[in-house]
Figure 1 (cartoon, rainbow, N blue to C red):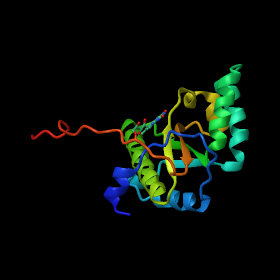
Figure 2 (cartoon, helix red, strand yellow; figure 1 turned 60 degrees about the vertical axis):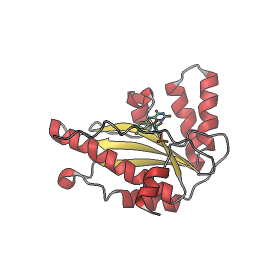
Figure 3 (cartoon, helix red, strand yellow; figure 1 turned 90 degrees about the vertical axis):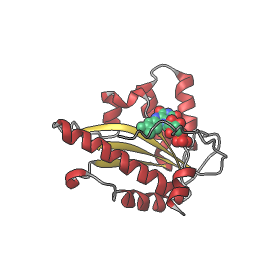
Length: 179
Ligand SMILES: Cc1cc2nc3c(=O)[nH]c(=O)nc-3n(C[C@H](O)[C@H](O)[C@H](O)COP(=O)(O)O)c2cc1C
């Protein structure tokens, strides 16, 4: 697949109405290949926790009790969506106490994540990066084993690519200014 084609056609998949499966070997291969992203000092400030298909239900129950206490409907809805997925990745960036290095780490993580989403798209796996407010809570961080010097920056929902996805148009007329 052409790089430009992958960039143009990758879309965030937000339809989770069917049961979906993905190829975990292809997923692991893409994660390894995505690490060729630029990262200053080669600090490689990324790691992921893979919640495989057979662990999604268990994860959802634990996550929902923390994120939506006493909200049965929300818990049920999360369970339905989560168990329909082909898997999920908890996205974890290494934090640095130094301001410059910390910025570099977060930017490098973004490059890693885009590499990963493009490679997965090429491999026939859809993605949606989710950043719900509960990822910042200590209990959810603990659920995914996030360490004190790390930040949980999202959950990558993994899907198949069978649905038609809308292209959310970009606006590039005013993004380039001549110096
Ligand atoms: C850092 C980041 C966080 C995101 N968080 C969410 C989210 O919480 N929920 C969601 O539905 N989509 C989320 N998205 C997906 C964007 O909303 C999506 O990229 C945007 O709608 C453009 O659609 P496209 O990726 O299909 O072009 C996130 C994307 C990024 C890069």
